[in-house]
Amino acid sequence: MSYNYSEITSYLLDWYDLNARILPWRDNPKPYYVWISEIMLQQTRVEAVKPYFDRFITNLPDIKALAMAEEDKLLKLWEGLGYYNRVRNLQTAAITIMNEYDGVLPPSYNELLKLKGIGPYTAGAIASIAYQIPVPAIDGNVYRVTKRIAGSFDDITKASVQKELEKDLLVIIPKDRPGDFNQALMELGATICIPNGKPLCEKCPVMHLCRGFRNGTMCSIPIKPEKKKRKLEDRTILVIEYQDKIAIRRRENKGLLAGLWELPSVDGKLNIIEGEEYSSKYIGNIKSLESLGEEKHIFSHIEWRMVGYRIRLNKIMEDNNLIWVTREEIEEKYTLPSAFEAYIKKI
DNA sequence: AATGCGGGGGT
DNA sequence: ACCCCAGCATT
Image (cartoon, rainbow, N blue to C red; front, side):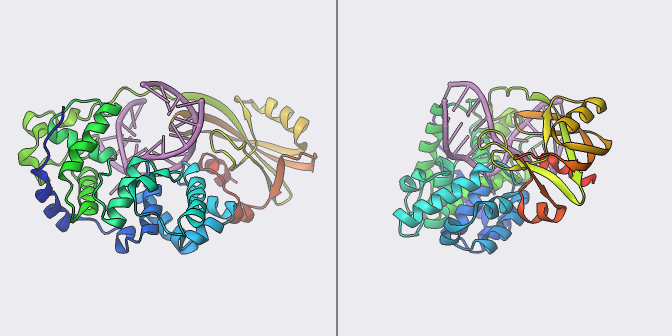
């Protein structure tokens, strides 16, 4: 059902004026900074983004620098942040902007929406925050806050519900402060009207008109369908050393961790004998082999149960897929996802 | 409409 | 364990 949110606007803005967090990308909301921060913030918490944002804009201070950056440098700036296609899309969009928009992020919701990596939320956020265009920016926070206020048990993953909320917000978004309004809704969701645990309703500026609070239903809103369970995968991770170098290889260009670097790994959990057999068959002549124990790494949809071995070689076999690098080179040049961190740290 | 895509922090 | 996060692209 459609809902009239018109009463929340002034309470929300007054609260935001007093309670807005100081964030790096709020210092100077130039379109480029807003864009970078919003892409980083997709499915990623503010605290995780902070250090990445500063480093990114220092290294790539404008759209042109982003468009011309080497992919390795780009990925290195994103290493550990996850969802690595975000940064590739960022560069694709930067090139489009240089070629088709005179190097300027377009001040238009619909034009922004055409750029790689920019969907309805991000287009709304950039348009409203950087260009003061009165359009909604609906993220997970906004769904939670608005549906609790409305006391609505709508399934927020349904397109019809999303469209309706867009319309409802478009009606009340203040034309003089659209960016602040959108950020205030998100800020409220991130700090007061929080998921999990208990929302801090007594601190909420719109508690008095929140139906979820009045009904005591706020904790069971919003409604979304049950998520599927993660797939479990067993893997064997090999830390292979020859003299002062470690073997790494590049992952395939599609799928999980596409195009990133990894420690050599094998499907399934090999026991120590199998690990030795595999290594002498495919990698080289073994000087020593020791177990590095078990680890696990959780992705959004997959869980790796890993066993690791440290292998030192007397002699290496030719293998075009492996390259041999020092630890320092890994840290400087090669993007190694967090999944392998535990085993690298043991060496 | 459903699925794939990272990593981390809170309960 | 399970939650979800300033979502988007692809199928």
